[in-house]
Image (tube, rainbow, N blue to C red; front, side, top):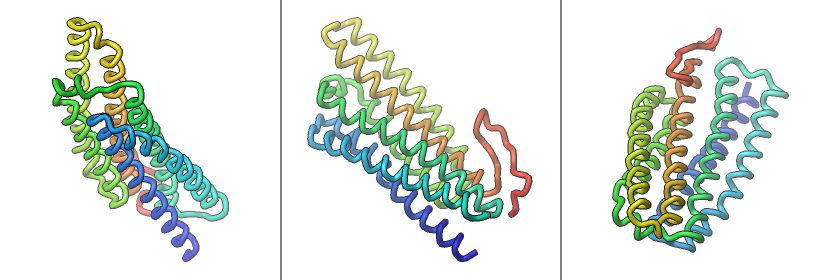
Length: 226
């Protein structure tokens, strides 16, 4: 029992490290785009390697736990949740690296001067990502429903920003290349919010086996109290 608890503690510490690393990556990626910081863009891109290393390391730790020990239901849920968590974190890391790398091909500053909602959307997605990670590590099931509403708002903002950029392309075709690239950046920001919602959905599952994915279905394990 002590051995299992110690291994679970190591998994939690390592997954918290990965989470913090990815949250910072996304924040810095958005900052690099906003001010066209090539140095910061390169730094974020290079930090994606550490995300990949952490994902592989954590996957190995979780699979070893499942193969060599007999975790009870609550421990099994936690390990299963971490395996899902690291997949979403890895994807956020990829999105962040791609967003940051785009500054080497495009300067979005002139476009962003007329699109203040981009900063609001990116900030909201970053806050959402941090809150989702916090809800997972504090096992706070209630945050999922709050963050689901934030995800809907971010989707609305994406639609409005895309509409503005399409109108700009129609008015000024010379801006099309940068505008289309920015639409892709916006899409990735929205995807980060989706991954944040996925992460928040893990807290109810860890708490008592409740599943809130797929349209809010609420199911429980056969032995939620174990």
